[in-house]
Length: 362
Ligand SMILES: Cc1ncc(COP(=O)(O)O)c(C=O)c1O
Image (cartoon, rainbow, N blue to C red; front, side, top):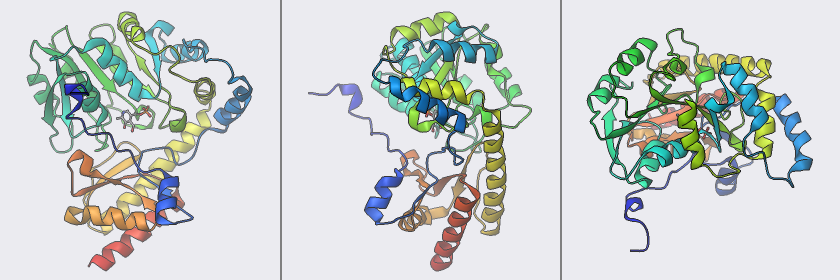
């Protein structure tokens, strides 16, 4: 056998379709992408300025340590630079955690459905995967805790979760953490952290000194820098040190570092982003109710809709009209569509197209 046995069961990750591909294949001039939970507002103007300023130096390798960015972010988080590691997107932080800590046959506990990369990366490592079903579209932390055995090495918790947009609160996390065995890693994936406006959202950083916790966040969502690929992990220095040993030396490019550094200071952009999502989500949910489409209450910038058995048809027809949403078959959720909150104009175009499709379907 040419390929490693562990990778034979893996299905390649299918991302939301790129705008250019849909334009080309559907022969469309205008395409709206509501499929990958990106920031519809665009990047911060400050970040764009910083990128332009850094362009002339791309003949040099980037700072492999992300020194300035690390220093700034550490100060913001009231932590030390040695508590941080940067990745090529927070996706890479998942890879680094698995690479550093998961041995073949170690158990990894993952919810089902949730962000697909956890399972993909764990399978590559040859881990034994325990999938714990969601309960009412939310993580069932009790069941996840009950699944822990002496062989468990890593537990992934997407909070808020993707694709549901639901979250687990401080009390639930507190109960979950109490009495967990010491020899395992709890990975809180907080890719949408900056978008959550819930008072009972857990402060996962408070567990840094009591548990083996990795908290991952990103510049892809609230900060609008998905295309540059930069995210980070927060943990105890020892855990960060282990992850650094398995990191490629120049995993975060220099434009991403410059953009993230500037974006951290652009509070107005973050506020505008939150406002746009709030308004858009309100508009979309009102319309889903009118259309009798059940959906999951979301604390993020996307909404999971139950469109019934016609879900796939609907997403295909939307695509023909130049609107990309996420068909949820890859998650095994054949009746569902996930839609990212866009600009108000994009949201209106989506609802208009959806209404036309539903009307025609009767
Ligand atoms: C839950 C979750 N984690 C991580 C990511 C990866 O984000 P990035 O690699 O762009 O930081 C995503 C992106 O959709 C996500 O939804």
